[in-house]
Image (cartoon, rainbow, N blue to C red; front, side, top):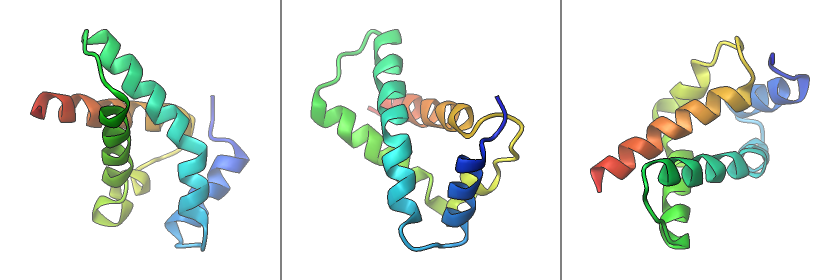
Length: 100
């Protein structure tokens, strides 16, 4: 599925520092990150409590901001933004779980 017009605008606004764009981004993609966390933990036979899941979600979202949002700036639009973020979130979560 290609990048939707809505997601393209959201990403452009975010990368351009538009006021309120980060909040819209977080509102839109937090459920995806939470789903990735739950699926990843389940597939690794790990039980996470709500606090652990919240911490992982915050870690994943914070990682998206590192180096002036480099991960988001590297998105090329060859897939949906949801797919791209799902893969990125999974990599972050697996790395964070391995650290613990």
